[in-house]
Amino acid sequence: MPYARYVAFDICGGILWVGAMILGGYALGHSVPNIGQRIHYVIAAVILVSVLPVIISLARARRAAPVPVPRKNRPWQSPSFGPSFRYWPRADPS
Image 1: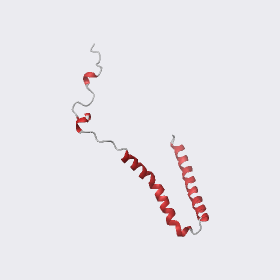
Image 2: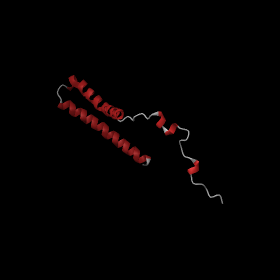
Image 3: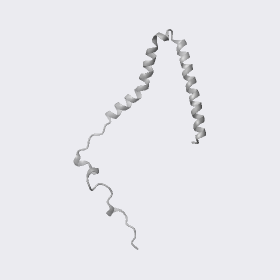
Image 4: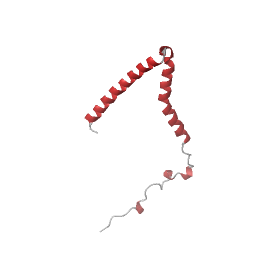
C-alpha cells in the first residue's frame, strides 16, 4: 500500500474513532441518569472488555500446550540431525 494512501486511511480512521467516542459518551450521558455516580462501573466494564481477549488467548495457549518430548526422542539434539550431504544430488563431475 502506498504511504499516502495509508496516511489518508489513518487520518480518516482517527477522525471516525474520535467522533464515535465523543458521540458515544454524549449518548451514554443522556441515556443513563446520574452516570457521574456510576462511572466506575462503566470504566470497569471497558477495562474488562479490553483485557478479555488476552485472558482468553492465554487460557487457550495453556490448554493447547505441547506435551514435552522425552530426551531420547528429540532428533534435533542428536549429532546426526539435519540434512545428510550424501543424499543431496551431486553435480555432474564432467
